[in-house]
Image (cartoon, rainbow, N blue to C red; front, side, top):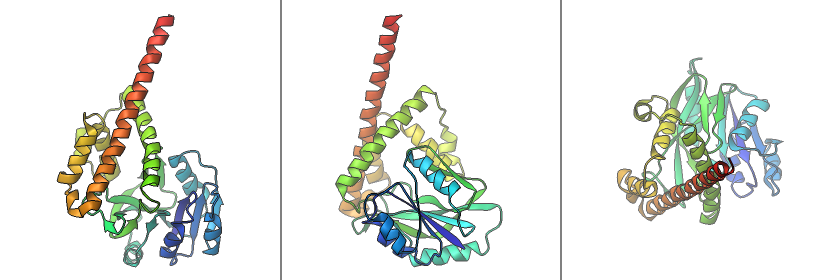
Length: 283
């Protein structure tokens, strides 16, 4: 009934736990970006089908996995190696898919993010993600914090899947988000120069969760003092302090990430302005 897709790059640490959580599935696909650790060996030992492709972008890689692989089942569950699927969610998915109408081509599932053993119940900003889709009816866009668009109705499924973003430690998280912040800064510059119009009405009232988040993020990026706004919003608006030290730590890291984006955006703007002045001087 459900195939599973896991995208990997050097995931020998997290992959065994992920594979163990989907052992109920008879069609597991690993889409690997030429790992140089034991990722492929672990995958094959678990009976998964492994396909390798050189990584050339987050959305591009995910779309290649959606479009090029031959799945056994109509429905596809998309995971990362640091995510787990508890048994209650498996039961919920199978039960829901028995009665799904043809017009529904995707489902949002609530994700529980953990810092250590603490569920960031309040600190987590975006708990719902489209992860269960009808094969051939979904496509990613945006290369950073990529968005999955579904051709058809998207509904929600009861239950949770679990995410452990700090499984490889804080250094790994910071290194990864340092890279993400560079991509976010570049994206902001492109949208700013291109005068992309972000809508307050869509940010507040759009029925499509991904569209709502896209416009919320676009408007947020135009605000001053974003790192402080994000920290206080998470701590007091979303009550991250109720998650204890883990919640405050996560809010601080998110503010740091936001500050990375602010600094890099300014740097790119300064470079662009310098290039413009130099070009005018040559005329």
